[in-house]
Length: 108
Picture 1 (cartoon, rainbow, N blue to C red):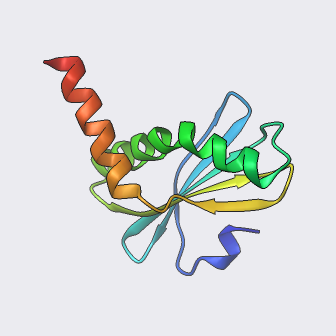
Picture 2: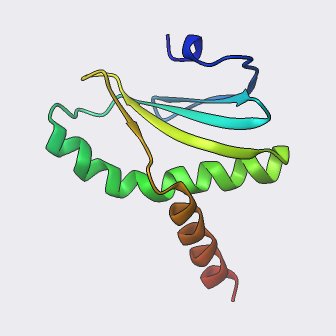
């Protein structure tokens, strides 16, 4: 359903990890990451709260895929399956910078 919205797509990564299917899709030389969430989340407030913890996850996905493929990540979309809500990470570059900062702190 979600991949049908994307033109000229090519699946470049798919994994099943702790009940979450993650898929990267190549669109016009840029990636879109879809992360299907099966959390027991039912309200808009719960989704907003969960995005605080998924922010670094989206930055990690984007950095990992950019490093592995050499392609930039256009956006990360979280799809909450229980509610059908689609949430696009609005500050992906900031999340990626936070991940870079956390990694530097670990290796320093």
